[in-house]
Each structure stands twice: as C-alpha cells, then as structure tokens.
Length: 254
Image 1 (spheres, rainbow, N blue to C red):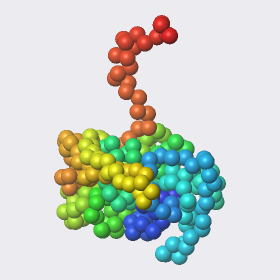
Image 2 (spheres, rainbow, N blue to C red; image 1 turned 60 degrees about the vertical axis):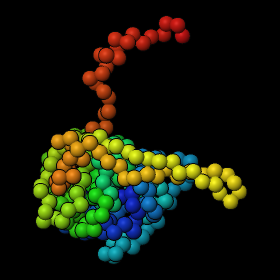
Image 3 (cartoon, one colour; image 1 turned 180 degrees about the vertical axis):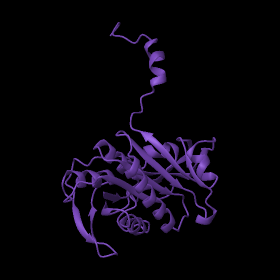
Image 4 (cartoon, rainbow, N blue to C red; image 1 turned 90 degrees about the vertical axis):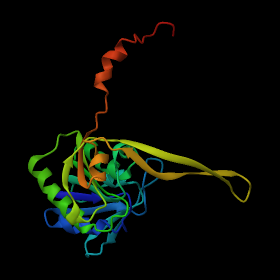
C-alpha cells in the first residue's frame, strides 16, 4: 500500500511527522504537502499559474515534496505523475483544529481527501480539536484506521472524515460512527482603512459552535469520542426531487 500524506497546515506542521512515522509502520508513504498554510482554502484547482513541487528532506531523512499549491493540488500533482508511483490511499491531516459538520465545505484538509476520491483513490481526512498537542496517539490511531480501510475497502465515491477531541488519550471514551452535524458560525466583518484611505476587510469572529445532536460528529467530539463520519460526494437531495417536480418548473413564459 502506497499512502500519500498531505495536509492544509503546511509541510512544517507539528502534526505531519508523527502521522508519517505512524503510517510508515504499516505502509509505504510519500509526503506531498503545501509549502505554506492553506487553512479554510476549500477545494481550489490551480489553473491560472504554474505550480512548483520542490523536493525537501524531512526530519526522518526521507524525501517529500513541498508544493506551492493547495492541498488538492498536492494530490493532483502526485496522481498525475510528479510522484514516481501513483498513490493508493490519501491521508490528509492531522489538521490543527476540528473539521465538523459544515466545516467540510471550507476545509483544505477535507478537500485533499475529496480530490483523491474524485480520482479514484480512497481518502481519509484527519482533524484534531484546537488545543491538542499530543499528535502521536492520534497518529497511531490513524495508522490503525489505514489498515482497516485497506482490509475492507471504501465505496468509490466516499471518504472518511475523522475528528479527535481535545482530551488526554487515556480519557478518550472510544470511537463513534457519526453523521455530519450542524455548525453555527459567528462571523463578523472587521473594516479598516489602509494608509491611503482605502477600505480593507477581515472576516473574523468567535470560533464556530454547533448543535450537539446525538449521533452527530459535533456531539461525539464534545463528549470525548473520536468521530468517524462516512461522507458521500453525491450531495443530491433525493428526498426533495419529487417535491421539486411538483413545482412544474418549465419553459413557459421564457
């Protein structure tokens, strides 16, 4: 098994090497990560400028790649041939902060796993709640999960979104298989003027909250469980199709 490891916190993330060391024990790995932080970057595809993928020597002496593009670009470049071998599994993370509920639509970490699935490669996204400093234990869990995924396989249009709570490992209550919860964002607009009097803006605010309905990833993490959510790429609202047909949307009057 050849595992591509990437993230959205960048090649220098303190969570990257613990993850690599753990997965090295169960598979061959390649680190192909952004050369800077791409948090909350979503799923871009860089097409308007060239991308660079520079070989770098990692802390364990192995070679990886630092890419000028987004996490999804890292996966695309590795898949399209920058790597000498095509990856068989994408593991993205461990993100420095949770990716719960609607966060998956913003997350560069999740986007890398999705990019793998789009190209026929199974994907796992890993995130640790803010404040987590022990990455060794989550990394060992991730390596175990890699083995399970390899053993059983995943459907071709699905990835796993994994979130670790910020509790000591010995106090972890277990693993919960969950659904996506509903995030509540408290964004604020901060407006300022530059030295030339032109306005510029920051989007800020408090960290997001969430509705901790039982069975959701938000509930699991807030109650000390590791959350594993299987996520399909097909987001069609099948239950609403018949209702939408009853609206009789047509070309009359156009």
